[in-house]
Length: 58
Image 1 (cartoon, rainbow, N blue to C red):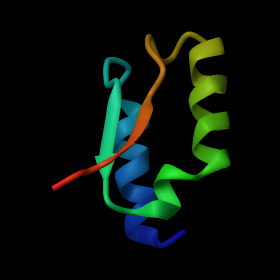
Image 2 (tube, helix red, strand yellow):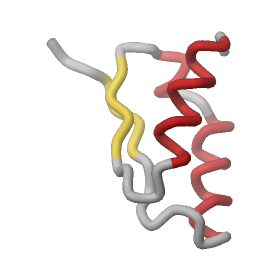
Image 3 (cartoon, rainbow, N blue to C red):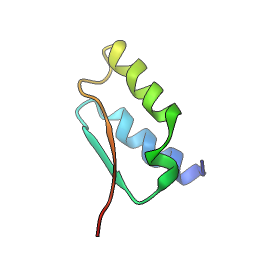
Image 4 (tube, helix red, strand yellow):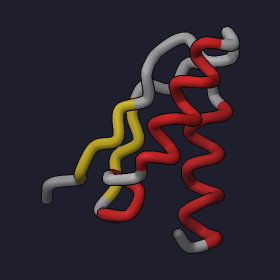
């Protein structure tokens, strides 16, 4: 994952109210790590909803 991808994911995950990350980046969409981090943050009460990683369709 590129540094810029990490920054984008961190912004989405750090907002406890965000519910979707819409992107064309396949690396982000298929990231098992992001899914796990999201789950851990929800279990710790730091996120309210699941972050859905969604492909942008033009």
